[in-house]
Image (cartoon, rainbow, N blue to C red; front, side, top):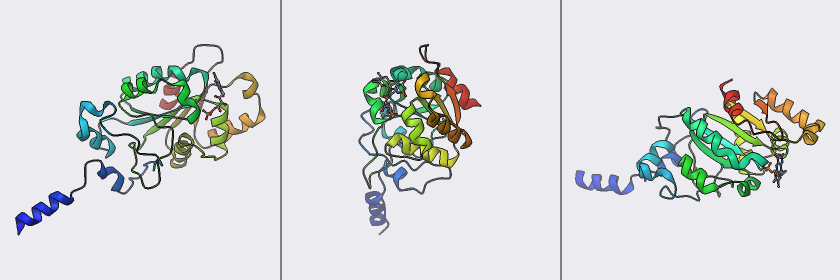
Length: 223
Ligand SMILES: Cc1cc2nc3c(=O)[nH]c(=O)nc-3n(C[C@H](O)[C@H](O)[C@H](O)COP(=O)(O)O)c2cc1C
């Protein structure tokens, strides 16, 4: 009888990757509405395989998780500098790109650097979550378009949905803008920045025409 019970427990035990999607969200966890378009073997989890994937997804990781949200701004292709600096500070970095930003990025290089897939689309209904919950978020480069939509409460892409949830939960969020002087002078933009500041978002301006000051993003996050 006990052998039969043991066999039953073995057969119906959850697969490692199911643990994350079926557990109740922990306090402070972002419920990310993503798409499961990736299997652990595709990106850099090969270093620890499914066990490492499961540990990271179930919150048993050693490091804090930083979401880097990348918008379709001119400096986007250099985001590897920010990722490297964040990883050097001990962050486990997950990159989320706006749909428009994907064309600016070397997605394979980012996935190799972070060990996580880059997501830009929502997951399909009923599909499992794909990323661990964030401890903090950086938006860089942050475009005029994304800042205004975020401040207005629009969530028509996965990056905006993640930002809305992060600000709603009161997570530390730092923004490094890449916006031309002409667009920055628009009063709508000023209103959006004020709205985000009021929500606790830490905002820094990346100067136009100069090397993009990636380090400011992490400085802002440190407060
Ligand atoms: C080469 C190129 C560079 C751009 N750089 C910027 C930029 O630095 N800042 C900005 O606000 N928009 C910039 N844009 C316009 C944005 O890509 C456009 O507004 C886009 O819709 C933003 O989408 P997102 O905010 O969803 O990423 C650039 C467009 C191109 C083609």
